[in-house]
Length: 111
Length: 110
Image 1 (cartoon, rainbow over the protein chains, first blue to last red):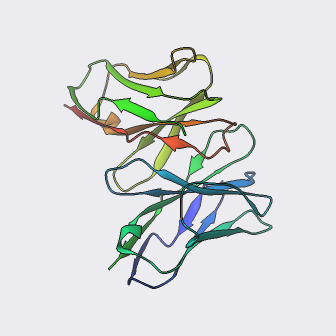
Image 2 (cartoon, each protein chain N blue to C red; image 1 turned 90 degrees about the vertical axis):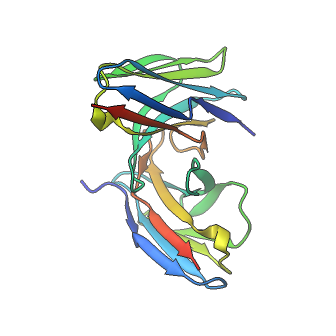
């Protein structure tokens, strides 16, 4: 049983560009949450998707948007990239009260 | 907004020592998570608890809801326990958007 998978693992983009990160949840999980982790910091909650809708959102600008597909996989889109968007982006999936399962993350570098 | 504080930020200990990492939060929660993060980024969920105490192998997690405090203990520590340990809190089950502490960087020396 594959756990949470994220792609790509690493990505380098230029300021102003747009990026799409992908996440496939663990089998049986229907909820996907996205987190941003800057170097040396704890993760920060971006948003959560359930039943193809954004259910909760953290304190992130509208440049950060997402989507969940009928198979529960999810995308995180970031527009107009800034240097400060460089971080590890983590996806976590869960179902109901089950513990979270995290992917290994996508390391985004903005130059 | 919940504030999550962990202590210590950094901890270096010798193999075999008993380790305690603390977590305090400011607002009532329904679940607290202890997570382990190794270099490279992967995060593993160690415990999710809402009351009392849980044990898994050499790891023990406790929570005091009234005092808004939780501790993670590692008995007979081993170099492979070296990692960042993160406390995170949420208000609704495992699927809730969590608020994370900054983590405790633990190094166990042989």
